[in-house]
Each structure stands twice: as C-alpha cells, then as structure tokens.
Length: 229
Length: 201
Image (cartoon, rainbow over all chains, first blue to last red):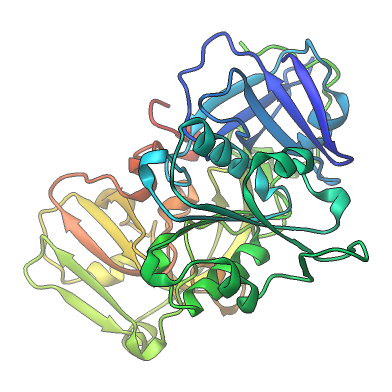
C-alpha cells in the first residue's frame, strides 16, 4: 500500500502496489481481508476506483460509522502497511470500451467509486461512446473526486439532496423521473445505464428509468445496504 | 497465511452461537438488498410458476393455485456471498418436494429462472428432501418486491444468490448449466460452510 488520498472527510482512496495483479475490468471489486494479532479476521468487498490502464490499483472507501472494516481503512491504515486483497471479482457490473453505449452512469454517494474506473477507462481507451454521469450526494463537501470531475471532461450532472450553495446550478433534492428524463437519452437510442448506490436510491432510479420506457435489461444495478461496511 | 493488519482489532460483536456463522461471514440484523437490475413488478394475475425441461409434461401453477398448495413455515439461517449472514429468518412457502411430486424426470440439475432474466443453477439433490422452497412470505408478511416478491426460491444451505428472487420456474436439465452469477466468476455450488464464494474455491 503506497499512498492514501483523503477524498472527503469520510472517504479515502487507498493506492495499492500489488506484487501480482492479473488486471481487472472497470466496475469490478476486490475483497479486503483484515487480520488481527490473534488471528481474528474480517473481510468486505470494495469497488476498484482505478481504470485497467492506471499504474496502480486504487480503492476508495467510505467510513461507515457502524462498520468494522471501513473505519480501519479510513482512519487507521498508514502508507507502508500491508493489505490483503483478493480479486478482481465480479463480471457483470463492468463496462469495457467494446460494450458500447451511450453510457449513463448514475451514482448515489460512494456509489461513484466503480464509475471512476469506467470514466478513466473510457478516456484511456479513447472511446468515442457518449458518456454522462448523474451524481447524487448529500452536499458539495461529500462529493468524492470533486477536483478530478471538474477537469475530467466528463459530462456531469450533480444532484445535492441536503445542502447546496446558493448559486448551485444542479438539481436540488432527490433524483426523480423528471430529472432522469432530462439526463438520459431516449430509449430508442439504446443507452446503457449503470446505477450504483444505497438500495433506496438504486431502486428509485431503476424504477424511474423503466417507467420512462427503458428496457430493464439495459439497466445494471449494484446496491449496498446499511451493513455493507 | 494472512499478514497481520497493524492496529486492527475489529468490532467483535458477541455471537450467541458462533457455530451458526460460516467462515468469513458476519451477522446482520438488517436485510440488505442485492440485485443486478431493476426490480420486476409482475401483476399476480399474470404470474405463474412452471416446471419444465427434461420432464414428461411441463406443469404450471397460477398464483392462486400455488397459494392453495400445502405450505410450510420454516425458520432458517441465510448467508450472502457479500459476507452477511442473518439468523432465524422466518419464511412461508411451498416445498420443492411438493412441487416435484408427480413430476417424472431423469434430470439431475435445475436452472431456476426469474422475471428480469436472472438464472441460477443447482443440483436437483440440493433442492429436494426438505431443503428448498418457493417462498412467498417473510416474517409473516407478504414477501416485498425488493426481497424477491411475490415469490423467491429459498435454498438456505447455499449462498443466497442461489435463492433466486422473482422466481417463475425451474427447468430440469440433464447437464449442469451455469446460471447468471455462476458465469460471472462465482462458485458453481456455493456452500457457505466450505466458503465456496468464487470459482476455484
């Protein structure tokens, strides 16, 4: 593990250097296993935030107050510490340049993490696929990758659900069908949609898209519940 | 041999019955939701459950016919491959033994299929002898759509992705045909006590 980057007060990116890594696809995750002195272990899954083309594997972890693994990773881990990873895992919630599009990514909170891998892969592979990101966060301070998004060239629409600056240009409040209709392409343009976030957020976004006439098979979801620490 | 994670102690919740928690799992009291796509909402009047494939005659039940079959209430522990386990969950549904009663087959494998296109494969032997159900109630209430309602498969002795949500039927097959997650790198059998999470475990 070589570097830690504080993304927000609650979220940290962990840059890892791996002795052997078979490569991964954008959207896959890894299992992280922690081992105490006495052998006690805890493991959880985290999305990979780096593109396959990036030099290091990056995980971005949000601290869950009730969590067991995430508080350690965000608060305790130091550069130079060893970290046991297994992966990459999962082959469904992935986007490759060959998958096509247009590509709509819808993130709630730390659901943004696998999408960083996707937009970086999109750029690194020189993909011509149209890409748009709808990102819902509680407040501007909770927007992960804020600086990167500003300069990435990604077409980002932001929704803030709890607080927003007076001059905020984005969507105020929770996402709804009207916003999605405005953000997505028409069903006949065949967009591929990936949604990642807390269960209620994913459920609302997916239902709204189906309600707008999108084929449920074109909508891939990844959810995390309150215990996904 | 795992390296020691410097400074890691863990939040060791006291577990009343550690023998019921498989390796690598932790207990939760919530009921997390995991699914690969939008939640389907099939009206009950259009719903049916079908057993087909390598059988003499396919057999099918409407929603009302399924409810009229003898049901069982079972209390079981469930284990999700994403590491959570939940103890003493109470379900009501129809045993697969009841549904297979009178079905003549030489098949040894089953593909369960669902609204929304999800599939999962199981050995027929994992679904008989009182080990699998089509469940339509959870905790005494109708099963909510996000948890697989109106009905889901319940195969609690395997990781919970085998307990297909929104199940609409079983196809009996002579050969073992990998289902949805099984083709995406997850284990073909999925026994939590053997920690069969991913291919190669």
